[in-house]
Length: 281
Image (spheres, rainbow, N blue to C red):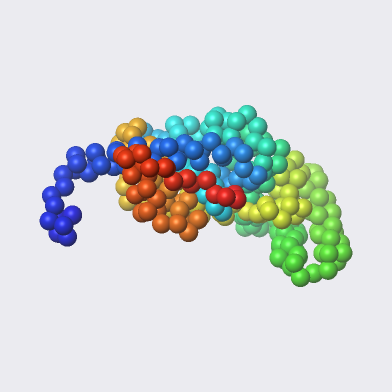
C-alpha cells in the first residue's frame, strides 16, 4: 500500500479492516453452512490448527461445487453432529478416522486409497505371511480398479461378471482367520465395513477415494504454514469465512474478489448478499 498507493497502513488498521470484511462474509457463510446437512454426498477431511499456541482442528466439508470450513477445539464426532445433525442422510466420503467410524453414516464410503496404503504396508513387513496376504489383497484391488475404470466402455454384462468375481475373491480374503495380527486387522476392517468400502461400485455419483476432500483442504494447509495459525476467536472466524469463499468461488469458477466486494456493499449499503449455495451440489 505504501509503495503503490502512497498510503501508510498500520497493523491495527489492517486488523480492523479484516474484522470488518469478516463480518460482511458472515451471512453467506452461515447460509451455506445450513445447507451442508442436506447434501446428497459430502467429502470430509480435517487437519490440526494452532490458535495462540492452543490446538484446534480445521474441518473441511465439500462437494465439487463448494468447500465449507469450520475450526473447532474438538476432533471428535460431536463436530459432525453439530454440522450434519445426529444422522446424515446422504453419503459421507472420508478416511477411516475414528470420528467418522463412530458417526457411522448409513451410506458411508471409506477412502480406498487409505486402505490400499495399509495393504501395501503389509507387503513390506518381514513376515512372509503378512507379505503374501497383502499381495493377494492388492492384486484383487488392482483388478477391481482396472475394470472400474473401463465401466463406460465395457459391455455391462461382462463388466458385472468381472466385478462379481473380484468381489467374491475379496470377500473370501476378508473372511480369513488366524492371520498374523496386522493382516487380521486389515481383513477384519474390510469384512466389517464391506459395504462402506465398495459402495461406489453401485453408485456412479460416489468417488472411491477422498481425494476431493484432501485437495480442498490442501490450500488451507499451505496457508497455515505461512500464517502459523490464528491468535483469537475472531481470527478463527475470519479464517473459516475467507477459506470458504476462496474454495467455493474457485470450484464455481467465480471471482472471489467480486464476491467479497458484493458482501462488503451488502453490509454497508444494503444491497442483496451474494450466495455461495450452488444451483446443483
